[in-house]
Image 1 (cartoon, one colour):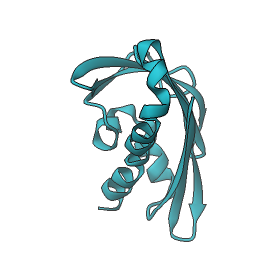
Image 2: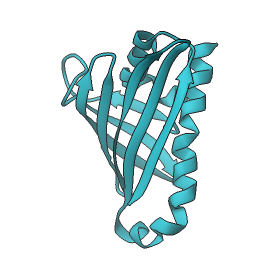
Image 3: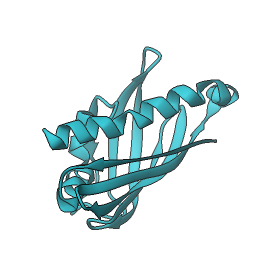
Image 4: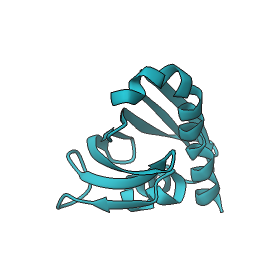
Amino acid sequence: MIQISNSIEIACPQIQVFEFVADVHNNPKWMPVQGVQKISEGAVGVGTNFKQEFFLMGARYELLGVLTEFEPHQKIAFSYDSPVFVWKGGYSFEPTANGTRMSAIGNVTLTGPMKMMETMFAPKIRKLINDTAPNLKKILES
C-alpha cells in the first residue's frame, strides 16, 4: 500500500474550492485523467458514481469512482477502482486567513501483476498525485 498525503493553501473561499473539486467534470483540468463521465443519477453526494479515462505506460484504462463521504464545503471521500490499482482517500477543506487549506490523504494499492512493483512505483505515484494540488491552486487562483 502506498500512503498519500498533502496539503495546500489556495487563495479562494472555501465554498469555491469545494464546489470546483466536487464537480467531477473538472477532474481533467487538474488531475492526470483525460475524460470523466458521471454515471449515476441525481445530485452529487455519497454514492455518486463516475468513470474516468487515464493512460499509464502507453495503455488506456478506465477508472471507476464512487463518493464514499460528502459533507458540503468540508469533506469529500472517494474510492477509485481500476484494472491496475485501487485508490481510497479524501479531501478536507478548511478556511484560513488567506483562503482555504485543502488536505488530501489516502492509500493506493497496486493490483494484479503491478502489485509486485508497488515499492518501485511508490515515488512516481506519490509525485503524480501530489502534483495535482499545485495544478488546482493555479487554476483557482488565476
